[in-house]
Picture 1: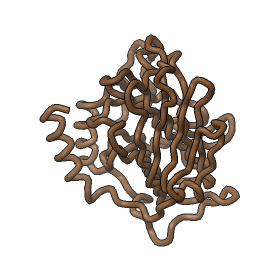
Picture 2: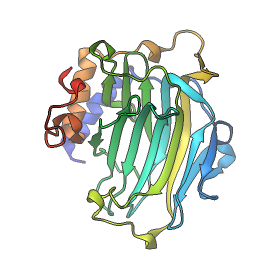
Picture 3: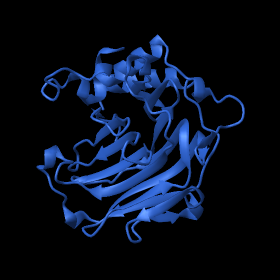
Picture 4: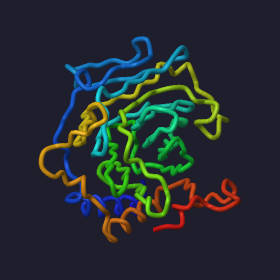
Amino acid sequence: MDRHSTLIISILLTALTTTFFSPVYAGTFDRDFDITWGGGRGKVLNNGELLTLSLDRASGSGFQSKKEYLFGKIDMQIKLVPGNSAGTVTTYYLKSKGDTWDEIDFEFLGNLTGDPYVMHTNVYTKGKGDREQQFHLWFDPTADFHTYSVLWNHHHIVFLVDGIPIRQFKNLEHRRIPYPKMQPMRLYSSLWNADQWATRGGLVKTDWSKAPFTASYRNFRADACVSHTGKPSCPAGSPRWLSHRFDLTAENNMRVVQRKFMVYNYCTDSKRFPQGFPKECGIH
């Protein structure tokens, strides 16, 4: 990372330290998650403090939360697949059930050794996505754990990396744009092979001689409303995330990060939307 990028992140992280806050609930993987597929390739270690997913030629692996959430702030520290991770995808997302599901996505698209990961984000409402924004990160996400967070309330959805907001999806229902607010979501993660599209549009394939590929997780934290039989039970008091909104300074700071690190924005892809951009793209 060049000195200019380092300075930008240092300034923004200092400015945001008081804005985003540590959640109150620290979970463990044996208590809060189920490994749902992978035939033993997902492992809970260190008395529930660490979870690893692995991928080989036969299968990937994945897990999901035991609880469903309806609004909250969710944090997870992840260390991504190191080395030649081309063709692999590590996902981390919230998703509801059914054919008209809501979803809030992080996906990490692997790359050749020395080339940057692409961090892919998306928001689905009532089964419709197509709201992709992609970023390069300002650090090596395979060298250590970093925190990836979602803040979700009635006002907006915010994607954060190490406490720094990189994307906002506003509640614009008053403009007839659907917003996720009725369907509780579980937290999911998986590691799988997607070499038909993940790296350079599928031109670079997975090098199975490097398998098994492994991603690691720790420090899951949730300050969230937990859904019980369709009724949310929220933390006592009035959590700060519940009423959180961006002021103009915070939005401008986020745009600084986007100008430096965003590599794809659906709202500027005129070839993809020749009949006009989605309605939310023109609203600030």
